[in-house]
Length: 89
Image (cartoon, rainbow, N blue to C red; front, side, top):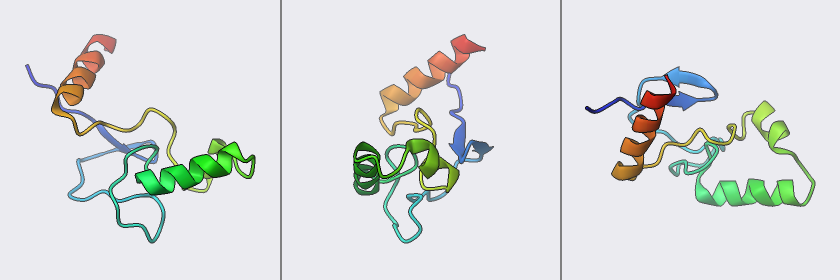
């Protein structure tokens, strides 16, 4: 049995988009973590680690998503996530 993975953007359910890009306004790369591409995520992580910002602040202004919202592109991990969702319901 194959289950559909639910896509989320800014906490709201959505149909799988044709193209999803990083939350940083001018970035066109594909998001990897917290809605950010790897490069932008590392910049955000650095700002948080330096104490300049918090993840909560970045989420509030739309420059990050809450942790745990990213769906892997790896087919095995997608199937595993779908299986986990099935058992939660």
